[in-house]
Image (cartoon, rainbow, N blue to C red; front, side, top):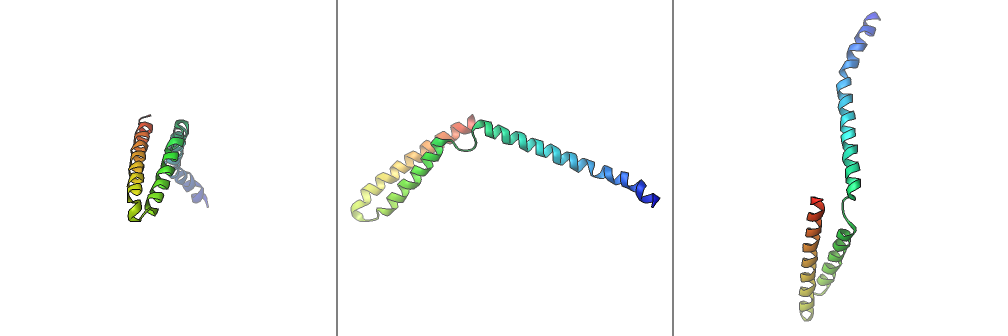
Amino acid sequence: MGEVVEILPEHRNLFAAPIVFVIVVAFQFFSWWLEQLKKGGGKSATATRLHGEIKDILKEASSLSQPSTFAQAAKLRRIALLRRKNLQIIKSYMARR
């Protein structure tokens, strides 16, 4: 029984390094999370709106599959392409910030 009491303090030191590591990683993650929260999260409201508009426009363009509506579908696809370019510009601006 006396040996068990002497061995336990040695084993306690084995867990010190992993515990410190977990604490440091937790603080790093918390710091990163606060920084992201300060920046405004992931997407801006404009980026979210543009993404929704692109989705709606492409859905509408795909519904226009008749030969008589080909021109309108092509126009909608071009509009969606322009919106995607605007979305990329916004995302690159947000990444630089």
